[in-house]
Amino acid sequence: MTVAEKEIVPLRGGIRYQIRNDKNYIRQRFIGTMVNDFEVETFPFDIQNLVLTVALSFYPSDQAYFHPRLDGKPFIYVPTKFTAVPGFELVRTFGDVITDKSNFSNLVVVVQVRRLRGPYLFRILMPLFFLNAATFSIYLVEYPAEKINILIASLFSFVGMIYVLSSMVPMAGKSNIFDRYAMASVALCAMNILAIGNFEKISLEGVTEGNAAAYLHVTLASILHAYVIVSMSMNILDAMKKTKCSLEEATRFIWRDDLTNS
Image 1: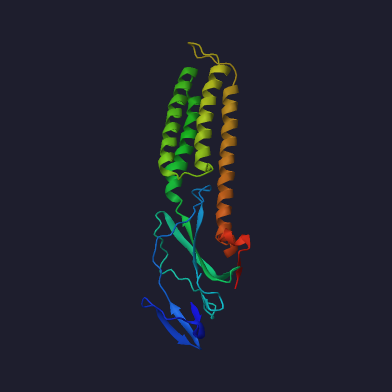
Image 2: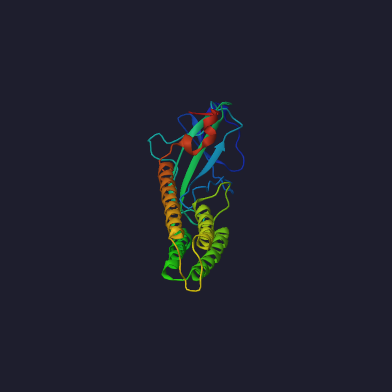
């Protein structure tokens, strides 16, 4: 932070400063707990922008202002690729000095972190996929009653996975891909039970007529998994786009034209 020498007032609290080229350079250290809005609609492929804004609201920018490095080197430094937020890894840090409409200097810093996806893919996505694949085992048995029993067992397994989701997936205003995948799997399993009961004649000999239930099962399962693949691909592309976003895109409040680059 730079303060014009002729405008400076006596400093208190042991703040360190030095005079260079008729200007006082003040160094300050801030320690505190920050609050940030998390966007988890694309979980677990979400990229979080942790925004920190420090404003000089007592002096206008012609008296006191933040002074970035003149050599063009980054003035935001994180010692290691580490973040104190569990389950995330650091992607990058960036920022700029901004002057608002009231002529006050603001330092805007963005710490961008990426969620570690591996645990969620192995603990949620793969079990859901294998449970869906297991429902096709009904075509290995002959009697429709046995098929329905297998589907009922699968239905309870999907309900158990929904309980796991409630404990592992963050709550969001909109459902994420895991929520939709699990609920669609439950609906598909229930529809298969109804389809077998309606399209197949159950008899003691296990004689069936037609393959309408099987065709319906394969068609709906194919549509469901195609949707999951497309949704995950779009979330991954969105995450890649966020890792290259500008300061204005990362700090959405700047779009209100309250602030301008100094």
